[in-house]
Length: 313
Image (cartoon, rainbow, N blue to C red; front, top):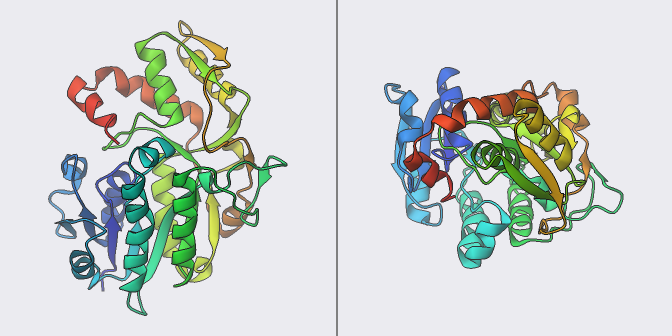
């Protein structure tokens, strides 16, 4: 019997890469999304009999219950993402990131399994600059704290929690507010820019490796359930200035300087250990340099209308 997966927020940045991957692996997939930016990001799956689209809000309990009824796995991606978006509308962030997660867990049947998309922003400022899954959480932003609370809710039903590194790369529903995507776009468009907190250490993960991690979690759910996993790779820990140098290697004509103006509300300056998930057999396969080359190839040819929508995250 074909395994049925519900993907909340499945037309978004992660979902539009993950859903085709699930379809290709012969999963039955229901996407539950508001489709605020349309359904174009899933057109590559349009002929699949295994795809169902449901327009709905994760805060709408009755609609959500119907979408959940016949599924075995729930991949919960729907969220207000990033501290700027959460700060802009705190009530929307809380009801979407916390209350809706609680609704999902409340309405799960005993046989159903949940995989929760979380973030390294949960860590906050790390005194020694190195974190594992056991590092105490001290989120500094509403985004980080709302995701940390979502983790606790999903732990109540033995869910799998994936704490994702900062994502980069091209997706069918592109985001340009992510660090590598944003800096690559600036390098192409402006030819020169400043970067603040350039010495801050960050950790990165290509969007296709993110999707692979969710598929991996389905395939290894019984081993992973009830636990948190940092998702990324040790070879993808870099400073922001390292990223700038990779961009300059790809675009030598670009001038990038360091600035004292600007601050990261989540204070993300740390090296992350990925040993736990690596021991299970998961490792990223796409490098930062490959992702930058991909961005530099595609970004100049995207339509202005499409670029405009990438800003409305």
